[in-house]
Length: 92
Image (tube, rainbow, N blue to C red; front, side, top):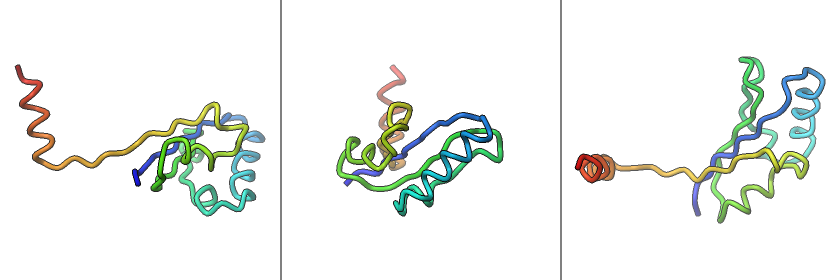
């Protein structure tokens, strides 16, 4: 299983922002109800990280009308050796 970051932007309009948050909470999904929100900082996006079998599976937990604007990003952890090899390969 891979780890994915799901980012969902939404309107900064106060009413619409509250409606999106309410939708997430009422969806019953543990992931959506526990998303991280940037609204108080003026960044109208939600994020959550979890393991999924595929990008498509990760996207399925996003409410249907928000899927078109969602970004699903597979996350990778690099070791120090991985980073050194990458740096050496790109130094030529």
